[in-house]
Length: 332
Picture 1 (tube, rainbow, N blue to C red):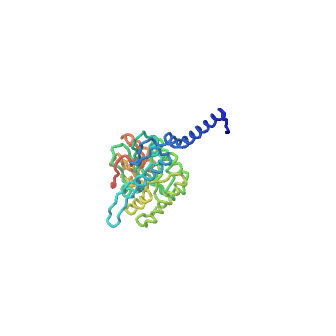
Picture 2 (picture 1 turned 45 degrees about the vertical axis):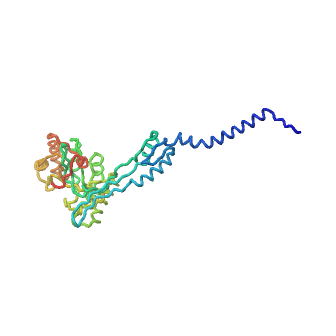
Picture 3 (picture 1 turned 180 degrees about the vertical axis):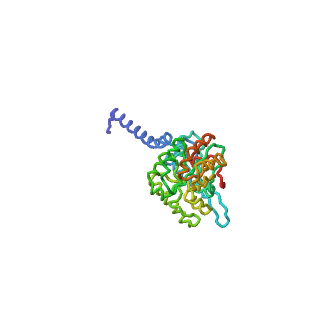
């Protein structure tokens, strides 16, 4: 009979090895669960009714994306129906903030129900953009001076000085041909905090243009102003003040609001400065858009116009500052 003698130390080593092997297997089986417990969404958390407890962030993101696809929708732009004259209203879209929703899920408490974080996406063309704006109905004591600039430069420095002295801002609707001739003045207008707006590249009669010609009239000027100043114009004043639904719709398709005026100083006829002052005050009310041009009488009248507005409690602001103050007026 052969007796094998096993030393106690060897037995201990073998036993320890077996225990470690078992522990390794258990740890290998338990570690993923531990990782999910420590780093995954908490137990019982749901997103729109879908269980995501224990899922890692990347896995939760996949769930959110799949759920978002059933919720999101593209905005629908307002449309003008040329045959009936009707304006079909816009419909906002819905967008899901995927990253923020995932963050909320990963921070949610045990058993919490999380909804998708959504926001409305406004269409680029609204029903209001398919109507020309003549002013706004507001109780705010504010008016906008709108300078249509298609010719002349000699009066602009003085006009800008007067606006600066009064602490007033204005909107300058520039033609592209003028901008090309006077780039430094264009840059000064922008640098002094005034609003640059679009008066068309040239000064044709818009009513005689096709849709494609109207689009070119606006975009060619937009590109020029943006290249020179970095400003993307969003307001359009049709040359000669000619406006109809076709013109407004063409501008709206490009993201523009068509702006007219409440009060016309008729300063292009170069009346006496006192008459320009008188006309600027006619039917004075908050929300008025006062049309002016860079003429010599206007430059002389402007300090008095601004002082009179201030004395009556009115601020001179840009058109874009004025528009949110009240309901737009679609006629004078």
